[in-house]
Image (cartoon, rainbow, N blue to C red; front, side, top):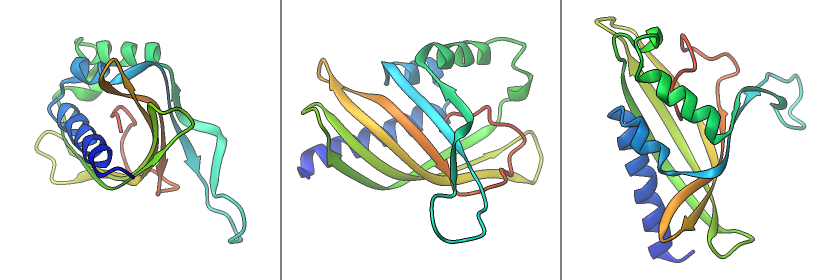
Length: 166
């Protein structure tokens, strides 16, 4: 992989994490392509080691850009009680691997994530971790996320809700 492309895409993902951590959700929306598919399938525990332990027929979410826009706008209202008071959150992104795709403007990007958040004055923190598979493309000279699939490592999520963006 071209080291310049690898660097640009890595920096793009770090910038995305910054926007999310600082609750700049409307700005974050600008990073999403209009035809984005944003999904998180369920991880299941299987008895044997053969086959996938992901259930792609059931998801925590399977959102289009319009779905995401509705969720974002709701966060700016008083009815978003899940974020009142606002949580403190951090997105840690690592192990970014970039591969060329079928289109010269598209790249398949795998990365690991660790998401941590705390609420109010509670001592307990919540976390999610796993891997993401993205299709990131260059549109009019800007990077956009065209597809994101989030694969949590936990089969039982230890968070109170899934109101965050990963």
